[in-house]
Image 1 (tube, rainbow, N blue to C red):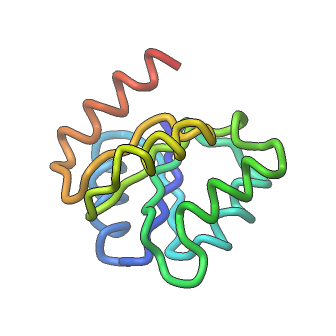
Image 2 (image 1 turned 180 degrees about the vertical axis):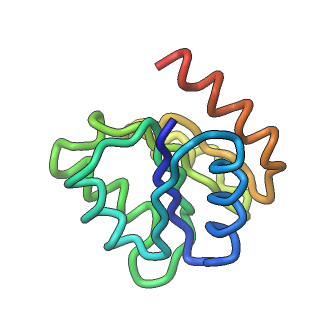
Length: 122
């Protein structure tokens, strides 16, 4: 699989990228929401792992932009968050087109298992 990893914490994207690459997957990494949009406009990924809480241009901003431009269904967006979003907020993200919302920190093996199951379903 080819993942787009989006998180403002460069250490997280470095660890995730290294892990996924070691497991035979390809990764494109960015630490900025606006840059993620540019990448998504020019490239297709099996899944985008998107941090919700980023400064300046959040993961939610990325999702809203894709939704407002009719592009959300072109992408498999899985959001990651260290906070505990309300059920209402999660519902809003799902209605906008987010495929899943996962809690950080998450064990890389658990995340990869989820992504493998997710890929089979989609």
